[in-house]
Length: 321
Image (cartoon, rainbow, N blue to C red; front, side, top):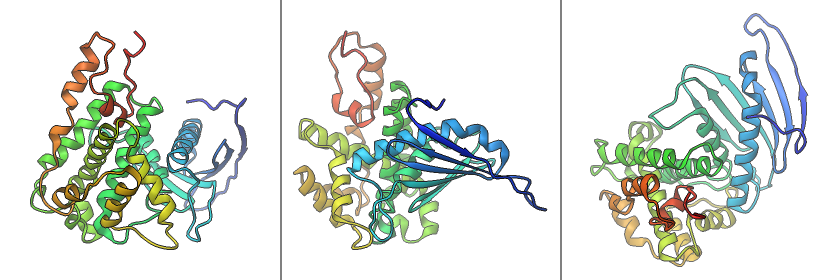
């Protein structure tokens, strides 16, 4: 990706230092439409990703801001637009987020057949809102904190053009498979699976992928039942407005309340069965195979799965034929 200097202002400040342990490092300053970025590279070689990181971070931040209806907030509840991105090169991709800060580890390889350093960056930027601007009351809601963030990560990636429609469908099928085949699915609830930070990782495919699939199911169902009037976005904006981290934190019960108030729909039984309970999510409500077939071979202009495609960030390609 290349930075369009006609639309953005870019200041570059290279700061080099030497020590017995480090040869050099660099800092990039960039101001976009909604975000002011400071990029810090831990190795000189990482600077080759400068333009791509800047453009993706700028676009993803703007997408997230639009979704939530406002800038992320710091621990005192003050909105901010200054974000530091620390970039490191290693053998495995990774990332983390704190208010105003994102760390990104770039590697050549991906993870689990879907994750890349680009989606890690989108994910961690999303955490500036979901995790840092409003926050869970305890670890039992990690399915929402991490899994729903993953759902929005790949929806955003599709909307930004990082994924083709077929790739978006292929990737959506992976968390369904990982979740449904995981050994503790059906034995533990998603909330039980994250009693502590170690169990969150031990039950990764139940928590992250189960939460991701939950996000897809809820969003598609909300869109279908409301005939497109609402989506899961309404809940995210409701949490952003009503649960500022410096004042209160949310629980599962608050999410159910938020869905009722923001989408006019009652999901209490869904959460009792599939989130607090151990029942397998209703995966039949996600006809990913049929949607992939229709996308590839349906010659008509009729969109057979409009709500599912919207959930995945897919624009029906035959709409104007």
